[in-house]
Image (cartoon, rainbow, N blue to C red; front, top):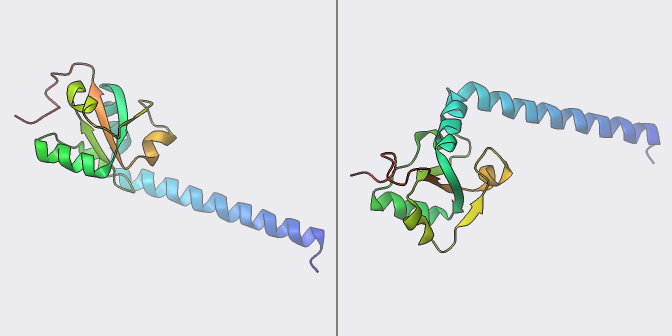
Length: 127
């Protein structure tokens, strides 16, 4: 039978290992990012709305000519971030509105459709 002091020591060791793993992940993200966080913030700054969409929908949008933001490929895990006009986003059945910003909903989504402030923005569909 383990003593209470022994159990506390194990709990502290687990907490230290958890903090070290999180810190390691943060450093890896920062060091390998090559400016991706700034690029990601710029992409979000131009969006008035954001929607989590299925990866299949993102592939369909790319096939239609919408381009992905390069900063999404630099994240780990990769994320498809597309700038899509408002009428086209309304046609996506499984879309789920999320907050425009670096929050948990954004990071959990595998694909994100951003609606720009000006729907005729040149960053949308390729011509």
